[in-house]
Image 1: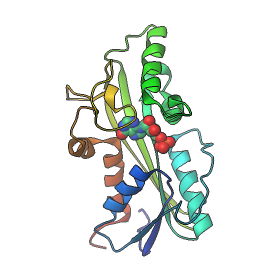
Image 2 (image 1 turned 30 degrees about the horizontal axis):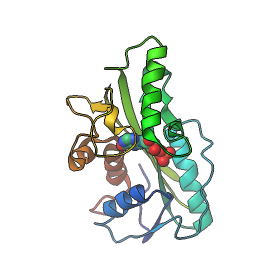
Image 3 (image 1 turned 90 degrees about the vertical axis):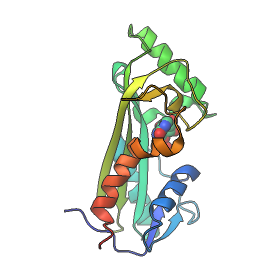
Image 4 (image 1 turned 90 degrees about the horizontal axis):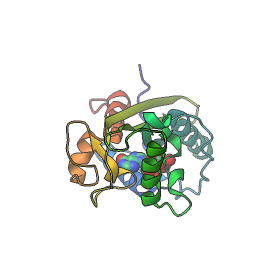
Length: 205
Ligand code: IMP
């Protein structure tokens, strides 16, 4: 049985404005004051974990310990099985210091070609790992995935990161071409959020 969230304050252990916005929206139905790690002057720990869940948990734990408040964090990325699960936890790093995802997407295509596989239609999935950690060290972790295939060249102006090369299963358009509202109903992050809310934030208390 997951531990329920009963506090009236929550720290978002992220310095990413988009992720902070999503969490504030998610917490809107609850009587919870949300603060971002940056507002509290908390440093970002190094992501030394070898899994999405380990990195999500280490970020949440660092913020919960430093603030003495429950903290929430997410870690996500694109997994390509034909590339030995790369870019995976290194998804952001593949875009280089300038965070150029055209570079990262071209690298996925090049590495698939070099591995002898066809880039077009290669299986891929996004993963979102969420961690909610309390100051006493207890953590509740959840993961969501959305599976699909890759398509090149990148298409669509919506979304971010690898969205323009990812076609979710059952669709013909990329996440980059999809209306953001629709993406949010089926994304890896939405699926992980659903699990977190059902387990730790039940509206009936
Ligand atoms: P992190 O979770 O901040 O370490 O970075 C995750 C990286 O994975 C992002 O910078 C994106 O490149 C990629 N990523 C995660 N979720 C998505 C998504 O929904 N669409 C496209 N790219 C994503």
